[in-house]
Image 1 (cartoon, one colour):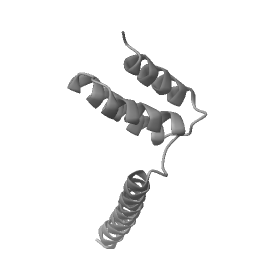
Image 2: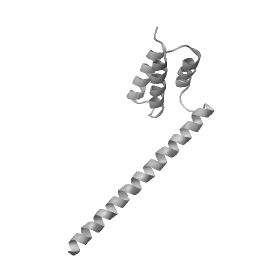
Image 3: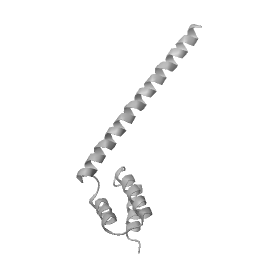
Length: 101
């Protein structure tokens, strides 16, 4: 019977530690999102090129579906390192959408 109690204690400790890590990560990610939202509102977040895309979306007439996709892609772009290959693909895709005839 003592082995069972030991196993239960180990499982409980491991579970508590994992929950603690998850809560800390969740807290930090939410804090990061809040900071990014504030920076976007001030206009100091993101690349100049992406800001130009957003400005064009507001000034020119684009279908709502295009606006939605471009905004989502810009958000994805801003969440990753600018030198990653995926960021480059997202940038090209947003550029393509903005410059459709």
